[in-house]
Length: 370
Picture 1: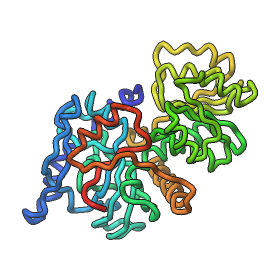
Picture 2: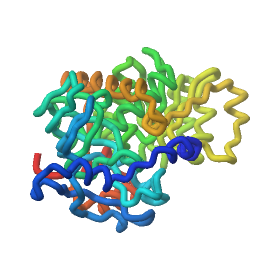
Picture 3: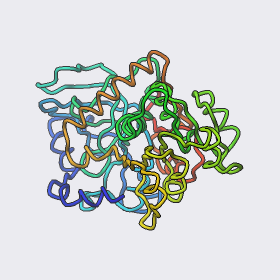
């Protein structure tokens, strides 16, 4: 996506060599404590470039507002597969550890930490883009300001599956799309990782939700999440279905999690002066005429931007989003669906499953038994 390349210059000024930092932080440990299991991306390429290895353990010192977190699970997201295919933002820092989403237990805290203490269960979206170590590992270090308390009602696997998709859906619907109670929203790929939480967040806002899915099994799944109107897009023209659902007017907000032709095809399904938000970069050959004629407001959503640009206040806002979602999860108002739980050493298989498509919910890597 274009944002990645636009921020490359800023990030290339501050490359981080994971192995060097880890060795420095592990220098005061006993020999038995100096390594951890992790999955390293050794070069851009197919899933086989993900290698399960022993690497230096980034345990001490934990500085200022940092937390040392023993990871129990890590979520697998499309950004992981894209970075694996084309390379991270720090090609000179290979090998790299991927994985933005993590959940685990605080092991140690820096002197400036105020909100957490050892033993606290947390979840977060931070690292894995090539600068800061990702979460395909047994340990990581994250600033407390970017971390939220894990929901108590769900497992670590479910918690690790949640952060990136929750923040993405929240920002797309509530902030980019300005969703209001009573509005009608169309969510593409409602059974997917982002889609399945977007349905629930839209319902929690008081919106009426239509969504596209590929099969009756997925239709049953999204109905259980609260979808009001399900469109089997392989059998039905989703634009006409959305217009029929809204008496010819079009939805107030469309949320595109698919990209490609789907983005442009959705324009006529949105009402005049309505909103469409996409999490993918629009194709260069997108024809904008229908969007312009209908005065659509276009929203672009990339929740990774604060991490890429080092925007501390926005990263703190992400943690606030996760904390509010944790409360909803504990109240039974929000559910996270995990389709596959795999051991860390099977990260390559996790990438293959994700790239094959047709998954419902999320894929998670487990460091050990919960």
